[in-house]
Length: 356
Image (tube, rainbow, N blue to C red; front, side, top):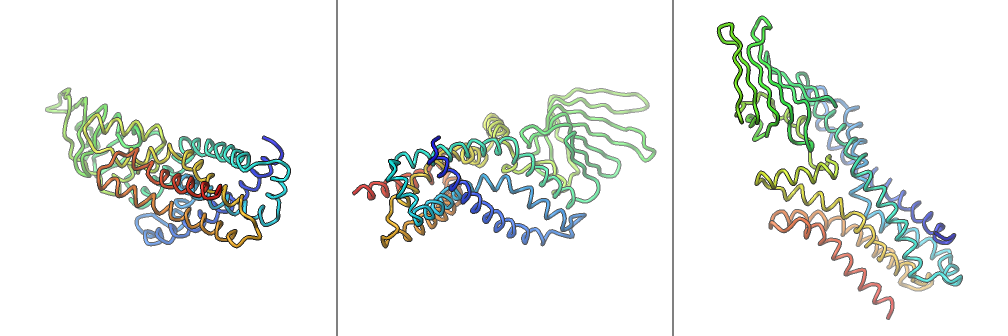
């Protein structure tokens, strides 16, 4: 990367960071206002709400990166055009294609870091925030740590040792004691499927019960268990899709398909995150007309405003198209690609107009 490319990359990253921080502050404030209505439920306090909102920032970073690429890039180039620095670069031999390629390399490097965030950082912080929030709201009787999930109802206890893909309970132990604290029954299941808040389908079950002073053991391929977890306790057990890592999302999609369950929502989220580098790269095309405008021309301000407005519309269109795709049962990959395709067509049209 040459000196001019590094200079462009520095300006782009500076304004990208400014836009991201503004978006995080704005939407974080709105989330906090929404959370204030939950403060006071169970043990949920203001400090929990603040930590919960802060823990969601790495995930929001993924949601805002495409629009921040366009907005931040437009503002960065606007400053360079206004100060005649772009004109000096082009006079020094830097073509528009080289300028776009320099920005694209910076964006792709940034996108690679964001993919690491999507797999390793965002899932950890958002899951911690979600579990902390749900446990505080549920109050006493529920505990979830990295070593498993515990809940109780009177003299009955359930322990889930692991949760595969953030949604499937594994190695489930269920204990029941009498009034004197003596064990009456014990169930162990290799895996469980949560059908609803009151019914679990246990698989590969080992059941042990004391009957007449004799311990009896029975092995069952599956067993319906009437759960005692409240909706809030159950919410602590199951993680929302947006808190899952890419690998967990894809694994859960395959599980749902194998068991003939609806997987479109999870698959759409997976493709939206996986296609983030492509979305950010397409935004670079929108920056070319901004860099090519004459600061003395009447269309310069319009170019910058148009790029920012289109970025906002892209963000809104992504949400609308996603909901319509799920409503109309469109292929998730097609739904995820649709907003990017529209932006690509607009970008190519804008660049063609620039050449004329």
